[in-house]
Structure formats: C-alpha cells, structure tokens
Image (cartoon, rainbow, N blue to C red; front, side):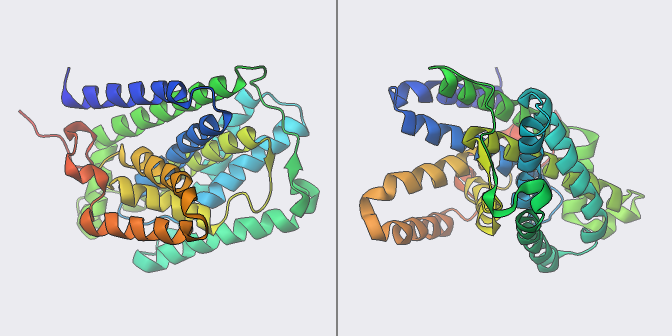
Length: 312
C-alpha cells in the first residue's frame, strides 16, 4: 500500500471514529456533520486554486444549490436524493455561464468580483420573494433520514460524498486535464502558446467548483431543514477560502483539515467568552505565520499534490 493510500485510509478511519468520540452527544455529532459539509465546499474552492484563481464566490453557489433543493423538496415533493445532483448541475451551469465572463479577469480583480457575486446572490434571494420567500426563507424542508439514528445516517452519507469528491478531484488532477490546469496555473500565456484553449479549461474548473458548491449548499440546507438569504454570506465564502489556505493549497487533503481545525477550534474556544473571536483570529494568524503553506506543508503525501507525480 503506497503512502497516499495509507493517508486516505487514515482519514477514513478518523472520520468513522468521530461518532464514537462524540459518545452520543447530539451537539458534537452536529459539529462533525458541519465539518464534513464545509470540507466539501472547500474542495470546490481548492479546485479553482488549481488554475491559479482565488475564488470567494463559493457561498453564492452554495446558496443556489441550497435553494434548488429547498424548492424542489418543499414545492414539488422531490426526494432529496434526486434534488441533490440537480442542485449541483444548476449551480455548475450558473458558474459556467458566469465563468465565461468573469474568468477573463485576473488577480485581485477576479477575487473582488467573486466576492461581489456572493453578496449579489444573497440580495437576489432576499428580493425574489415569489421564489425564495424573501427574508422568511424556506423552512420545514423534509430530511431523508428519520428516527433515532438520523444523525449518524446523515453523517455517514456526508462522509461518503466527501471521500467521493476527494477521489474525483484526485483522479482529475492525475489526468491530462489536471496537467493542463497546472500549466495554466503556472503561466496562462505559455499554455496558450502551446495551443491549449485556456478559456475553455478555466471555465471547466470554475464549473466543477461551482457544482461542488451547489451540492455542499444542498447538504447544509437539508441538515438545517431550512434556508434563508443569510444562510450563505460573504463570511461563508471567505471561510471556504480559509479552509484551503490553512490546510494547504498544494494538497487535496487541505480543505478537510482546514475546515476541521477552524470550525472545531472555534467551538473549543467558547471558554474564552467575549474573547473567543479575538483568540480565534490570533491563533489563525500565528499558524499562518509559522506555516505559510498550510498545515499539510509539514509533510505532503506525494500522490495528492497539485504537482505531477514523478515518473520512474
């Protein structure tokens, strides 16, 4: 078994053992569920880093996916398992359409525009009352998991999707498409000189990232059984980006690790009371100063890197 397989197996074992550590606590199980969903959202943002773009719009696509699921399940009586992939497809389609325009921008201009997209999506949901019910939101969304074991069933379903998403991205980055992404990330002009349709591949990466956002938003919506315009905000998008930075941009394990450390860390700092946010922010700054390339820069498992694998 190679190192990457051992790393994945270790992650699966940790995720599976979390309910045992929770010892029947509904609160800590809900924390674990949120970490899993946030990790999935972070994977999409990580994918846009593969083409060298900083994406702060994941909250917008999560909002799209969440409302698609909420509307289909409450208004049309769809099963969540049918609404989930549709949410990803709709969010991906919206992301692809927007990407054809906004991906022409680079650097801080692209980042600022994606930040505006999140706020624009929130305002659209707030004012399109006929569809989204405005500030009242959509509540009473039926969950597919019921009974005493509903929490565990939700958690393991979310774990399954997270691991599946990680595998999809890993396979993608090991493929020819992943190699093209890396070339674009290094130098777009050089990639274009090789005859690579740079614009097409940039849109592809952004579309996939948006689809991840839509699915993640649907998962969080069904877990909360409600959605409001304020469910996904600029802060949500910023956090999705921070998961990648803290965990490590060069490793697909980065978003799950970053989400776990940030979300769980904030919960554990409740003992500081009014100083909680300050201690939390100071801790993040300290970690980033010591490990500017993320937590996983301590030891990077080879096969999960953005860089191509070494040939024997």
